Length: 530
Image (cartoon, rainbow, N blue to C red; front, side, top):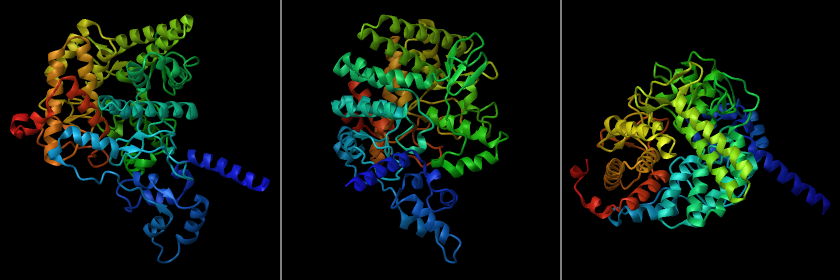
């Protein structure tokens, strides 16, 4: 009996350890062979595959067989791994309408609580959750907030609570929320929307939610602020940058300087074109992945090309607005618990950050909020929709908000909604593409400064485009071409994905917010909607 207990204990320990090992760490040599081959067109397929037996046994067999005549790598991989299958193979009934479609998608995109599978790259979660769709088979951090907006409209509060609980679980287990619940994402996070999720849930269930999730809010804050006490002026460490005047701002960062495992061959090939040392290039690419904007000219130098990516030199305006909101949310949660002294500390940090955002990210000449290059000590010349975030969190003055509203209307507003940047670079987070989360942030921020007419115009154009494409294809897509609404969105490292969590969520939220008659739009001829 004692022997059986010991074996069971060892299995649990080894399985827990294997959950934090990445596929490249588990399968050295085999990983590189697969990812540089043409077995799977998408590098994400192999890292999401589940080994059929202990990786040590697979590696032993591989090393014994790989140099033998007639060895077939594809046959070997398929014999030793369960390859992920698509969950989105359902038939859309366009005639049933877009609301029915989204209701169906919530079921299609929902995953049951994960069973801890030995040696899988999946980080098991205790509660059901919604995935974005397509190749994105796991929960994604910032996607999930915008998905929750739609779940709220569908009265699926339990699903929202489950997802927030899952993120709290990840913070408790790993000290932060990874990019997604995969072992190969354990070196980076994503835009910190956890406080937004908690606030959303608090609107439904009451302010007690803030107190309940306060420990995780503080832990996430500590992750983003790691190293702030020792970093010197004009220096950076991890996610922290100390400005010349001593103020603290944040940047995106990944703890690894290796190629991304889910995009291995693309990173290796791209590094060959860069003048940067490979490790520096990989770090910059990974930091851009942490931002969610992978990729955009906002992260590049004046050449506007990926080989000159410089993400870790850039202080993003949107990230720091989100962290301001995190500081304010923690302060509110502390006031709920009558911890006035600690609440004042977080309020001071939020005020200091607001001052720094206004100092370093506001450009009076252009009337726009932008990123700041702390190495060059100058603002970025690339204007992006990240400039709307100071409105969402009421950081902008009334005059600044007026100028941003003018900029949105005159420069970013296109036939299908707001374009992400003004640069046509071929990258997916540039023109001509528009993305649901950025439409929402702009619309919500404008309404907070009473620019209601412009906000509704943006929402209407975006919804018309979403619904027209749905009528034509039966799909809701990850991103859209908002400049030429007859063309599909392009760019990116993978084909256009459908599903799609945040598109569904924002669409349903906006339809209800503005009391849009979707049936009327669905009946309208296509030319009326352009």
